[in-house]
Image (tube, rainbow, N blue to C red; front, side, top):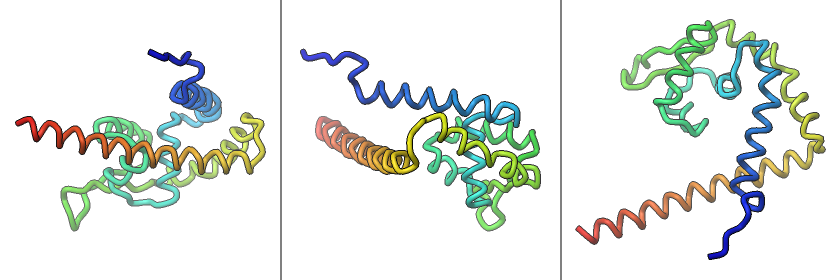
Length: 158
């Protein structure tokens, strides 16, 4: 069996880069009382306030069981509110508070600091973002196809 060294594997390179970029964000966000995941949630809400928990889960690629405690902490910090949708009680909508909206102005330096830390030109960052977004889309599609195939195989064995 041909085993690639760990350092030569795409998954390990992506994992390492993800860990490294989160470590760059950490000292920028800690003084604001934010975690990296809270910052990502806020960025989504700054772009579109009033989304449902389900929409936020999908956008962040998280399960509700992971996102709910995060949202509770953000609500306790006064950054957002969660409320049942009046037209569909099954949905919980998330709205920024004034404090949550004001946090946007307090984080304007973050993206520039992270970009400088990469030492990459803007075009390279944009190109890499497109490639990684495409990779994620392809891998999710492949996973869905594999799950369907596994279900079909399991179903035929019953």
